[in-house]
Picture 1: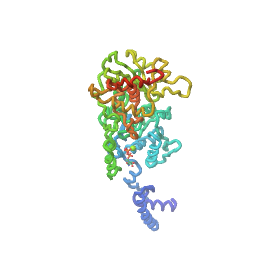
Picture 2: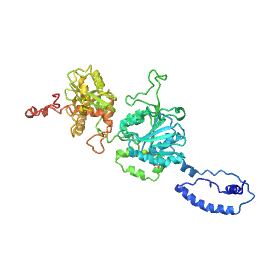
Picture 3: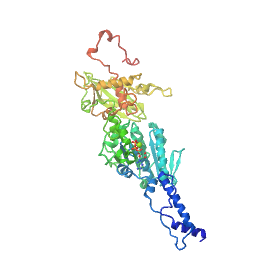
Length: 532
Ligand SMILES: Nc1ncnc2c1ncn2[C@@H]1O[C@H](COP(=O)(O)OP(=O)(O)OP(=O)(O)O)[C@@H](O)[C@H]1O
Ligand SMILES: [Mg+2]
């Protein structure tokens, strides 16, 4: 042993406890660093007069709790811990603002990032919101996974052992194609109610697979506040089916039935996977709750926002465009519609998103009865025409159909438009009114229709109980925050749009409106090409 090495060993033997901790930049440690300078001065004194008789010993540095917590993320007790330890396939951590939801979302993939086969995807709705999350991850990840690297070009974290976490955005439904052919064992959606429909969430479920799924598990995780354009479907998927905090078998949000393995599968008939909702509260997060400032800010919000953001209340639906909706008067048990009643249909078509069709009968008192609905996705215009004609086989005469007028637009080719394709199949349509102001006029007419008529004592618009999608959609459509005259067009509103096109084809008329002087000259065919 050289003199130098001997000296070094003796030096280490005498060092004060915990002095081998790595130098850190955090504020708390800077303070400790100033102490260290004094200690160093002391050490140099020791070196000057080394005790010759003390043998070299290796002492483990004392475990410093503060330093350890600074390095590794420590979940807040309660819901944040529950979220991070949950084992169900799909979990939503939702509730009041500031509860530590997004932070927990960032911490969740840390359990697997050190595994070479870990493949995770964390999405936000837009790129700007994503930036904020990336910034937070840059504070947390390098401390939690030493050596982890951020690739700006790939928007990806790569751990030294090869685990990957892609941080991306998913705005339009069509953005899901970016993830086509990819496989993930962990997928996270931050602020889930920002997605107006469940399309992206459902699609991404198909990307959840991994050769190492036995070791790593397969997880979909989401966080959110109540409110937002997706409030209604998120509530149906995670909040309504079970008591808060309890795991339950996943259900189809349209039918409410449990999702089962299909016929022919070895597990045919068994339930597919579990979901769970974990409620969050600001008071679970000491990092924000303690000062009381954030709470005071939330307390100052208007009542419905305060209920959603401070109390995490999912039942507040203020901001709903049609607060007069009342299930007990607007929903009726189906009955046989007399053949003398006029029937017509209305449609809002969307291939990538959804198509909504409603069939309406007009009673002698001009009450509109929505007696059937069709709500589907990924159906071509010609297939839709067939489905509609099949559904109407027993209906007798359908006087007319009204369809979103944009379907008459040619889409970069010279062939027939989608509307023309349907017309050629015998499913005839006339175009809806899409002129300026028609959306607002349609909303006003919807309000008038939902009112109880003072002569008949009944609402002017009712729905058969079997029109479950329309019944779910209409009361949950939010108002447009920037234009309270209209509904929020980001919400799931295809059936509402179809209904709006439909009710706007019925003139408001009553015996008292009849004016023989103006009636004839004022007549105008609402659609010149069809003459009615
Ligand atoms: N376990 C934790 N350890 C350290 N800091 C935490 C922890 N949990 C939360 N925080 C801190 O609390 C702050 C607020 O948490 P976060 O942003 O996750 O709340 P949120 O519920 O997503 O809020 P919002 O509803 O506004 O999106 C975070 O920025 C973070 O600094
Ligand atoms: Mg958040």
